[in-house]
Length: 402
Image (cartoon, rainbow, N blue to C red):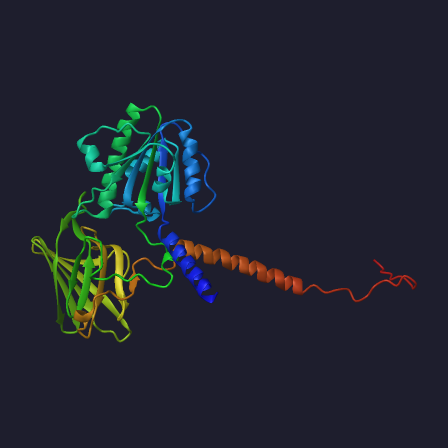
């Protein structure tokens, strides 16, 4: 009997793990030539069946449904901005102002739900659609945006897909009177915090999927996805490829990056008496002119056993006439020369502080509520009961009022 119970427990655990692994919540950006559903779901996460019922309501008007499916997408991607501060989805944001748009940040397996609607579904690749721009005779068309380039940054790919989506949608809107368009993905591109309870995310030098550049020596580990510079506040940034070397000079570690047009020197202080390493200064040599740069976000420092990371690290001069940008910049120093034995970055100090504006807002509101509750409890404890009462058989209490 105990063996049967053990088998049942094992099978239930395996089934639970498989169900969790096959469930992914991705965003859905939905709009139409006519009018979308104005009801906003009250739930933070929408199940596959609920999303299926919502789409079936739209299908009552017999629209032509086109689905633009990224390989990976998350709500965090809609909050991304390029180096100039512009949004990654300019056309979708503009279309959002002109049409009624439904945005669902967390939908369970939307592609699978669309395939189980009982309608005729066709899938095409975006490259095949560009070569032969003929729409299949189907009710639901899924366009897989699987044309990522090896030398292309993810933000650039999403911006290019944004332009492609609107271009294709406008052509379809001219052909069909009623069109329902969806922008979603097969998988999520970010790992939710609840999915990584027992493990912390540490970037590995040997297990990264990003198209970046690594440099490792006895004194440092450096990683960055791209680097560009802007001279005299120009309208565009010029991308360069840097080859880094490092050296121990006196008491400092100097990282030197060279290219055909400029040279970058980062000088790190090895005076770790307070337990921190610090980036002292950044010098750029361009056209035989030296520029002293400072970090535009915050000072770059970390404990001796930690790395420093920033998603969009920038350096600039005081008058902003020269700017240097690094994408997904991460660096760690090793003062005892043990970097050659390391294959991963240690835990990272991030350029975005932990106490963000929402956190401070929550602390402020909680402090006010705590003050009100403390004041109320104190006043309730100060209430005193009467110790003298009227005797019905005796003389009444008389209070003389003058």
